[in-house]
Image (cartoon, rainbow, N blue to C red; front, side, top):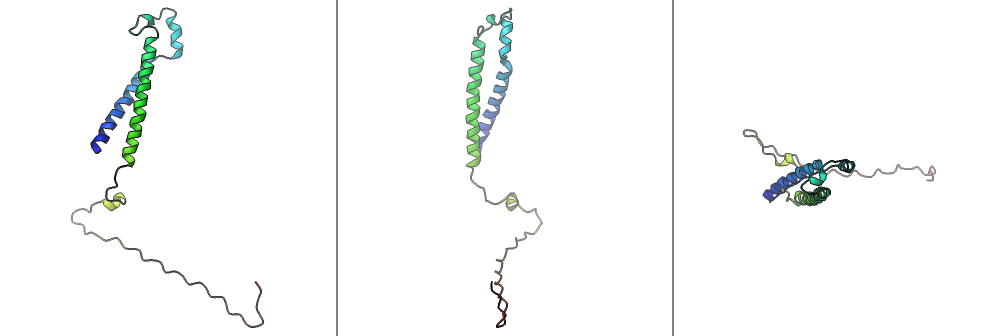
Length: 128
């Protein structure tokens, strides 16, 4: 199971780097004005608007894959079985040569008795 987690992490990082590269390759909306004055975009491999569609669609596909791999990693992280339970300190092995000490067990606290009402003398009772 841990091998699959490592594979998904590597794929996740590669997708993230590809998204970064594709976003840097794309040009902004204002860059289209320059092509009207001889920017030379019509002579490119994808044509004047073909590269924008190709890069934006590829970015959308990679973003979807990135989202799905994020969900997969989250699922694998939360469904991992607990190893031994407890905290890290509970699972720590003592060093060689040190005696193992047992954890003191907590004794149940004694319940305190309810206080007794004070004795009243006849004729001096106070209404409550």
